[in-house]
Image (cartoon, rainbow, N blue to C red; front, top):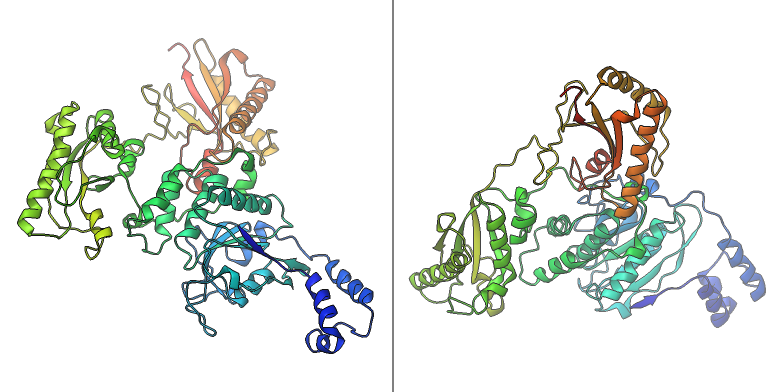
Length: 559
C-alpha cells in the first residue's frame, strides 16, 4: 500500500523555499512581508474554520439524488455531475460513506491520457471539494505519477484534507484496511466518503463494492456476485472474472468491523426493483441453495468442470465441486430433471466436435448413474461448438468452451403463497388481516407495532394499535387457546444482537398485553432474530418489512 497526501504544511515549506517574491505570484491572500510565524498563524486560522454542516449520509443522499446500487452519478464519459468531473461511472455503495467508479482519463475533454492511470488532477480536486476523506486507487500502474493531494475549501464551508491511497484489490490485508477506512467514515459524520476506483469503474471497484456490501449490509454471497455482474455494464464475459466471483463468494465479514443495524439502515442502498436476468452470473451451487431462483429451461455452466483438448473424460470426478453440487441438488430435489449438455471449441471438424461433446456429456451422465441417480431424471446431448462462451481465437479462452452445461427441464413448482419455508414442519406462515380468520399455525404481522431504531420501548401509537388487538384476544380466550408473540429482524449486523433485539421487542409486546389484562397462560413470546424473513433482505423495503412483530395462533379454544 502506498499513500500520497499533502496539507497546508506544504504551503509553509513552499513559502520558505521560494521566498516572498515567488510566493506572491502563487498565494496572493498571504501577506508575504510578514514573518514565517505570522504566516503560520494565518494558516492555523484557516484550519480552524468550522464546517457549516456535517457530511452525513442524508446530505449526500440529497446531493446525489440517492439512487439504487446501479444508479450512476457520473456516466461512462464522466458527465452527469459537474462537481465530480474527473471520475467515471461513479455509483453509490453506502450513502455518504463509500462510492465506486473509475478515473476519467480516456474520455476527458482535455488533457487526455491513457486509460491505465490514476485520477486526473481535476478528479482529485473535485472529490476533495465534495468532502471525500479518501480516494483509493486499486491498481499499481502509474500511481507514482499521481498528483499530490492538497487541502481544499469544502462544500460544507470548512477545509478538507483528502488522502490518496494505493491498495491492491487482490490483497487480503489491503482489503481489510480499505474496509476499516469505510467503517471509519460510516461511524463518523465528520469523516467524508471514501472513493474506491479502478480504471473503468467496473471490475476491481465492483469487487471492493461487493465485499463492502457483504460486510456492512448483510448481502449474501450470491446477491453480491449478482450485484458485481450487473454493474460491469456487460463487460463480464471472460474466464478470468471467475476469480473475482470466487473472492466475493469466499469472503467472510470481519467481526471487528461490524456496524449497528440502525446505521446499516441509514446507509445501505437497495438493489433495483427490476434486474435483467441475462446479466446475472449463475453457478450450479445456486441449484443447491437457491433453487427457486433458477427457472425451468435455464442452462447452468459448470465452470469448474473442464476437459483437455480432444479429451472426453477427466480423473477423479467425485472430487469435482461442480459435480458434487449437481449430485446434491438431484438428491435433495426429487422433482428435479436435467439435461447434461456437452460443448467443444471450434477446432477440428463440426461432426467430430459433436461426437466429442456427446461423449463428454455421457461421461457426466454415467457418473451420476453410478451415484444412484435414476436415469429417468437425467439425459445427455452433444452440442459441439455451438454457443461459445468465449472467443475461440486464443488458446487460453478456447479452453472455456470445452465445457458441460446443465439445463433444468423440470423442477418443483414454488408455492408463492408461502412466505416462510419451515422445512419438515407443517407450519406455514401467511399474511392475515385478522386474528379471527387465522388457522392454527398461521401468523399475522402486527403492522401497527413499530419501534425506534435499536429501541425496545413501545410507542404511543403502537399501544393504541395493541389495544384493539387485546379486545380480540380477550374475546377468544378459553381452554386450549394459545398465541405466541414473535419478534423478528432483518439480517443486518451480528445475529447474536439481532436475536437479543427481537427477544426484547417481543417481550415488550407481551408485557403490555399482560398489563392490560390478558391472561398470561394464553400467550407466550419468542425472539427469532433474522431467521424467518417474509421479504428479500436484498432490498431496503424488504429489510424494513422483515423488522416486525408477529402473532402466531398456536391453538384455538376447545380445538
